[in-house]
Image 1: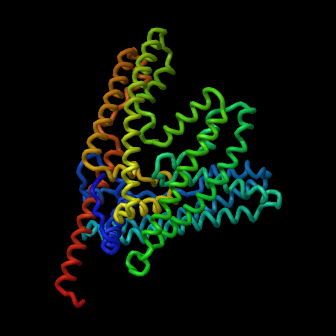
Image 2: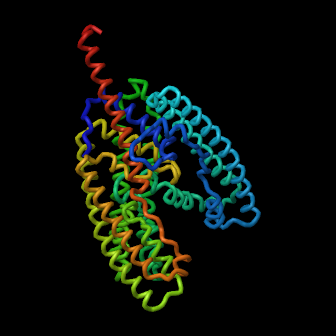
Image 3: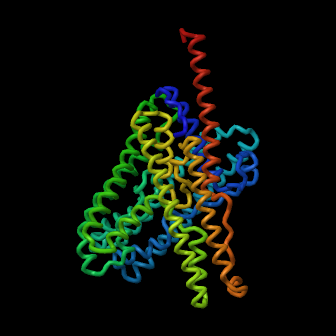
Length: 466
């Protein structure tokens, strides 16, 4: 694992504050402007940044879900739509104000170069924004509940539990399997009615246990976000709060794994095997995400092909999928070992690791999908040897992707090639670029933290009476 100094609690508070401000600055402003070069030039990035206004957290699709889940009549449905339109207007105005504040801070850091101080200010903006964003959602749902009949209100807890699972489970997932929705997994299996009825009680038990954990995680995240890093008294319990949110995340991971096993064991035949395979793949979503080759196969096989062409393309696809499966398995094993390494550091109470992982987890918790870090946070803690192995596996997989696309392309006629353009495969994915950039920023912040600790210790030695 990347060397993170095992500082004592006092110095670690200062180090953690510096590390967190860098991460918040990255998540809020730097990441949306990722460039294609490998080295991080922060001032150049800031100079060319564009800051979008965050879209509403509660989407229009949620209105349709409410209408369906509560069996609303047409008039009540229209009223809910009107309430949502009002929510969108207020949310957009608040999000625009937040964007403008971020933009002003970015101009400030461009002029001063003091991105650590600006990062601290950004942390406060994000804390305020997350609270405001949540309050607007709560207000919208309370307004909706005010329009309901007693019978419809009786259905609300079940709807709310389902919504929490759908919208919160995947957010900020750190542990492999933590973000996997077992209900969604079973839905995707398209079981027949008797099989679905057989697993319904199991899914109900899962949904109830998971919802309690999700509510604990939301409370734990709020406690972390409310830490005043400038107040020594408030910092006293900060590491306990980091441990609390990570503990709940482990419990969610374990609940997902346990219930997936139970459900798989109750479904006979191939469906059970599919559920187990899919749970593993969704535990490592970035590893098992479709590649450019997968998308190209789908596009090409939809063309009007000769039998020889189809046979050749399907053969290429089969070989490629075997190659990709082998590489993906190695990548998943590497990430599993890295998770064990991080867990060992957390168990030893390495305060810097605990602060970085815990704080990142909390600030991600209520964000929207688009705001999540575009990489597995465990990547940040890899040492050089681990990262070299990761890079090599990614290069091998890219080679298989490019080769498969080239082979399929050679089978197509010019007319078919026009209908299915050959996809570009970047030398390095955006998530790998993002990892390098934020790791560089973290190392800078840790160096600054270590220097600050050394200066503080020197000051104490020089002035022992102070």
